[in-house]
Length: 104
Image (tube, rainbow, N blue to C red; front, side, top):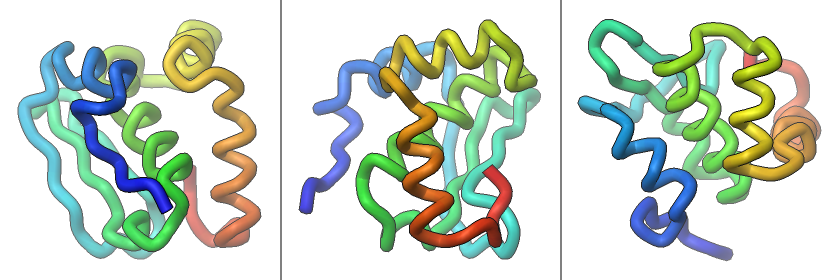
């Protein structure tokens, strides 16, 4: 098992340096994460602590990118690939682990 340490992940460190003002972790019923563009903050579901690190990295990068790009268009997808490689594999892994009971 690998522990995610943001300072050890250069891609995530670069994203955090782009202006993240804060983040929180709490129990959420329907989402793995969310972002507040005005506050420049992200919210992560506590249940992610029970999932593989690759899934946590996917959600963190996903939400951080939404602070810059509010949709899932071509630019957002390109940035996801530049930070995580074939991010669709991580997304699919998370879906397989938990089923379709959460919104990505």
